[in-house]
Each structure stands twice: as structure tokens, then as C-alpha cells.
Image (cartoon, rainbow, N blue to C red; front, side):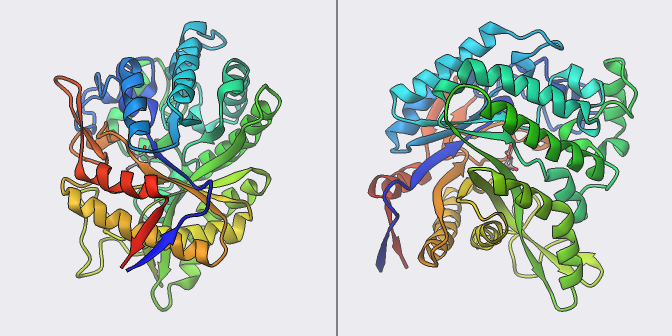
Length: 416
Ligand code: BGC
């Protein structure tokens, strides 16, 4: 067994997003989608982990495990519940969260948008309309002014390339999932919008939303830079290890050119690039290969168990973006906690190989601290290193939490 020491200052964190853990996010477009008849959501988010009230306990838990960075999102639907009406109470809540991070020794890494938007934004063009980039920048400006002095680092939009990526991988239709799901049309009707104008982040036309999201990152970054605080700014991207079987190279490269390269180029003016990786994607001469390779386990999320994907995506991101790499999400949804340990062990092995090759990887953030609301899948998926009894809100660290805590505290890993 060889021991690898991570560089001094390498950070370790866990990530979460407001809608997935806070509870009661009723003014957001997702709450509406979850509660529309015919919804494809397995269940509504409800109170989720009640992190809105229990954040102090959760932050203590994370810091008690040895983590030194906490990635979380603030909720636009709470901060700007109606156009141009900013809630100082909501902003003050997030100031308290930020202060609590500092109190327990966690560097706060704030995501300004993690999939959910205020209903009024989504109903008025949403992520298919360039106006949303300006609205997003205005929200960043207001929130940045209120919170900037306490922020360590910021992510503008979580996985702004997600529609483009899922569409080139053959999982989402190119013109947007919203045009295939009748309940989305019903949700639009319920808030007085036409389907054309109603454009939730993950359901929009891939080509149009890519342009709006690129613009939103650029404008949001500018707004944040002009405010108080000298925090670092980056964009976290959804990345798969894109592999070509013989003859699939051209299709693979074309998919990358549409779904990831423009974002990596934009990131050259950022302070870091956020890599978020869960699995791989294979391409053949006909395009993306759906379904797994025989012999490779398919996880309950529907994709392959492929921990080595992280190494490949770090290498690709570093080569294109040419800024420091932060692993802003990596993890596995599984009821089998030993499998989580094995997944993270192998993924970290990939981080080690990148560091040995001189790639500037500055930290690793596990998704997620808590078992939480996994979007359309509801609560069945378990990404957390801590389980949550949602009837009592009791948190119980899993063996994987203790295992990762040892690596984090030692800032080193025993390699097989
Ligand atoms: C998203 C999270 C999600 C996780 C696991 C990421 O793409 O940022 O919100 O829970 O994947 O599926």
C-alpha cells in the first residue's frame, strides 16, 4: 500500500442545493411541476431535510467530519419572489447561513442557481429567453451586494450545459423535454403562460438554452465581480467521460463541441472550473450508445457504475479551460454504502493520478452530505454520506462518512 499526501491547502467539501434540502420552496417552478397532475416527479419535495431551519446542525456535522468547504445554493425564488421585489429577510437568512459556515470553519462556496427558478422567471420566457440572463445578473448583483463579504467562492449556474449534454447523449430531446411531457404544458397553463414561454432550466430547448446560459454566466460573473468581496468565481459543469468505440470519434467530438467545449472556453476567464462527474458516455459511428456495456453495472439512476470517469473529465476540463480544477460534485446514488466507499476510493485514485501529472486540482467536493430530494426520482436515490429520517429529521452518518472523514483529516489516502 502506498500513501499519497494531497497538497497542503487541498480542500475537502460536501455539496447540496437549496431545493433538494431546504424544504417548502413553494414559489419555485419545480414546486409547481411536482404538484401538477400527471407530474413525472416520483413525489413532491415537501419539507425535504428541513435544512432551512436545521442548517446550523448540518454545518456542524460537516465540519465535525473534518470538511473545510461547504457548497450550497441560495434560492432565487425566495430572494426575488416577484420581479424586482427583493426579500431582505431571505437575504438575511443566507447571511446567517454564511456566518454559521465561518463559525464552524467551513469555507462557503455559494451557487447562485441550482436548477430551480422563481415561477415568474420560468413563466416569462425562462431559459429560452435572453432576458433571463439579465434578470439573473440583476439577482446576482443584489445578492452579491448583501452577501459578498462573507462568500469564499461562487458558482454562477449549476450545470449550465445540462440540457445540451443530455440532448447530445440521446437522453433528452433536442427541442426540450417540456415539449414531450404533457404535465409541463399543464403547469404552464396553471401559471398563465403558454408552453412556448414556460421554460424550466432542465426542460428547455438545448440550443436556445445553451446560448442563454452562456450569457447568464458571463453577465452573472460581471455582476458578482462588481460587488463587495474578493471571492473566486467559476462554473460547475455536468461532465461525462466521453468514450468513442472505433468509428465513434467524430460523433463524440461533435457532441463535445456542442455540449461542453463552449463552456470550457468561457471558463478561461473564471478563477476555476467546476467538474461534476458521475458516469461515462460511449459513442459509436451512429452517435451516443444508450444502455450499458454488458458486464458493467447499471445503477438505479439508470447509468453505468464508472468511477474512473472523474479522472477523464478532470483531464479534459484542465486541457480546455486552462484554469485550476475544482471537483464541485462527484458521488453515487446507491442504497449500498460499501459500494459508495469503493466508488469514491476509485474516483480519488483518479484525482491522485491527475495531481501526479501536475494538473492543478485544488479540491474535492462529494455530492452530497445528506440523502435528499433527487429531482424526478424523489427520495429513493441515496447520494448522502448521512442518512435522514424525514419523519423526525434525525441525521445518521453512514460508514462512508467516517471513511471519508479519515481521508479528509489526514489529507492523504492509502492506495491499493
Ligand atoms: C446535480 C444534483 C444532483 C446530482 C445527482 C447533479 O447533476 O447538480 O442536483 O442531485 O447530480 O444526480
